[in-house]
Amino acid sequence: MAGKSPGPFPNCDWRFNEFPNPAAHALHVTCVELMALAVPGKDVGNALLNVVLKSQPLVPRENITAWMNAIGLVITALPEPYWIVLHDRIVSVISSPVLSSEAEWVGYPFQLLDFTACHQSYSEMHCSYILALAHAVWHHSSIGQLSLIPKFLSEVLKPIVKTEFQLLYVYHLVGPFLQRFQQERTRCMLEIGVAFYEMLQAVDQTIKHLSYMDPICDFLYHIKYMFTGDSVKDQVERIICSLRPAMRLRLRFITHISKMEPAAAVSTANTVPQTPSVSSPAAQSGAGPSSIPLSVSQ
Image 1: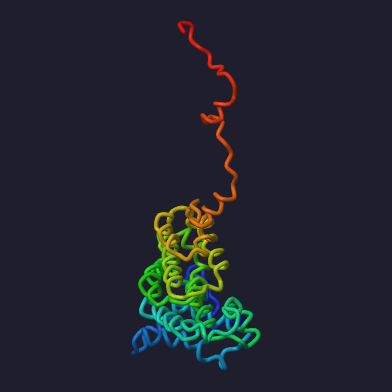
Image 2: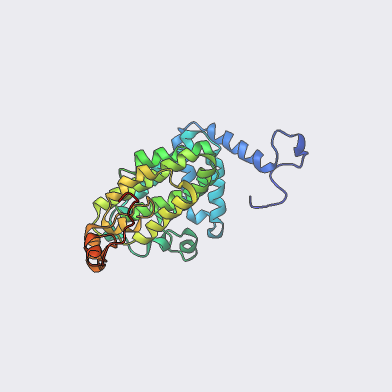
């Protein structure tokens, strides 16, 4: 990956080799060595993640993304016990006081979750490291490995997401992979869309004030018009109807709900002048003699 020449393998005719290129050969032998270790796969997976999470002095800062991609390539080529530990790291970050307590959050969340900008300014946080590493790992994952994300969202993350910052973190986590789900696993895309609304409902019922309603609604509208359409309309309509009025007003076009709030309907009825109907008896009584045509017999 670093482009060093000559490489660690001798030059040979890769056309008739077991591996298509030196990078594939290096990946294979690395995985064989890791699987031959006399330790559980969970420990090996955590050690791989700690290469960039706890060994920053040994990793050049300017090459941190290349190291993350290398870890993503290696860990996704290993069996499930090796890479499933990433889910445990995500749970620990979402449950940490940084995201679960609004009092300890300092700064604009969208800036703090931008790993590239924070890394260049030496202001990155552990949650942004986990976010970038999860993106690197899932980017190299097969669709079979990614198919576990909907279950992970609904069964593991949904019960612990209670604050607005946790919700934004989950949206940042899964958002970049919606296009791939829509193309390769439509069923998973629909399940993820419903899980997003269920998390929003839990957050709406837990906290008193939502500071980022507009970005949240923009993201949900993006999902509707780009990926799901009306496929999840029946599932999310009851959820939207249970949200607070401000959020329900912003999301009214997702389910095409044309019903207005009772107070708004009353005020609208009072402001609109009532025009008499043309066909009313009162209007016709003073209009002069009737000119209704009679039949021949009459």
